[in-house]
Image (cartoon, rainbow, N blue to C red; front, side, top):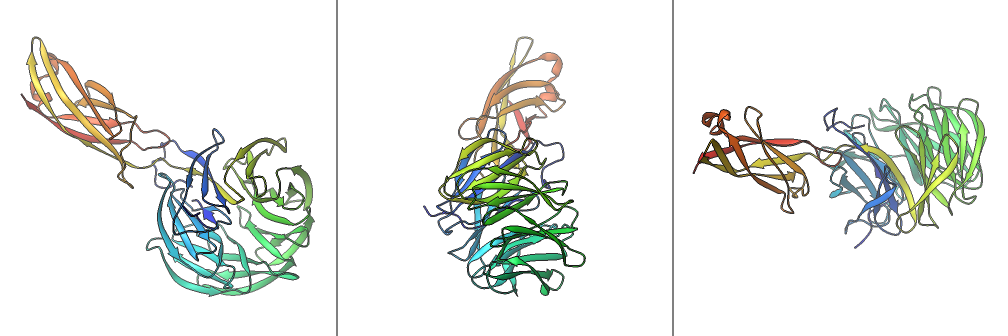
Length: 425
């Protein structure tokens, strides 16, 4: 099987009910093949996604509501679309030549892909999964970021020598400014309040901090040898920068514009992402084939996870449970001394998106008035079935109105309910 592509993008939970539990998952694009899905609760890789139409991952992002991932395939010129609650590949969207970076609008309506070889940005409609527009921005379009209000897009140009970052007006999809930042800018990130743009200047060995209102550089902060990736803390106070040839992670104070620390990680770190609470930073180590886990309070590495070959970009996001569908069947009621027996109560649980059966889940069966009947666990086909002895006081008329089957939901699969029929034997 061939690898998924270059950049993956995840999105705050929007489709799950507010009370539903969520998983915080990391998505790691392996340049040697596939996207590793990492459960941050256990720091274990739960699956590796592959797409026969995608080739050579580079970076990862996760789109706006947590329900879609977008991965650029740098050699196939496509954008792979992943349903993140079920971790299934849904589509491959043609984009420009050599897609590298990817970002999603805050509304979730559009996906923007920087095309390195073409020097353009592809605008993908998230509803139709088609490229609707192409924006010329200039040579070696690499890292890409968007403001929290979605009005401005920033694209780094990975060109040797004095480099710039393009500013794109997303209302008109036109470039409106070009900001000189340093030598060979390669990655960009915007603070959560939208006030600052942080630019990684690969061959200046520093980051430039730009005022997004004036497009003026407020200052530069030294990091280490050949910086590559950047992530910003949820409070906007710090930036975390990978130093690919120093094998370290730099921490930068974005208020004082000073370096804070340099943390040794694995060999040739490329990408970095933080958990939603900012407590941990995850760093991809290209040569090591691992992800280093950094505690942002102690500024120390607290773990390392093997992933795929040559990991590059990654994203971390809260992902809601997969929506499910429950279909109840037909039970039969048998009279017995001092009560009834309801036989063959059943229900089948499947994923709404994929139709796959969901095994190992407890289904509760009740009368329509809520009286407990029985509980059963779904089998490999997603079916749960049980019999129930029911006292006379429940009433024949109540039983003949049928039963309810319900699944309470958990972190992987959302709640569901259905109504089944009961007839006399």
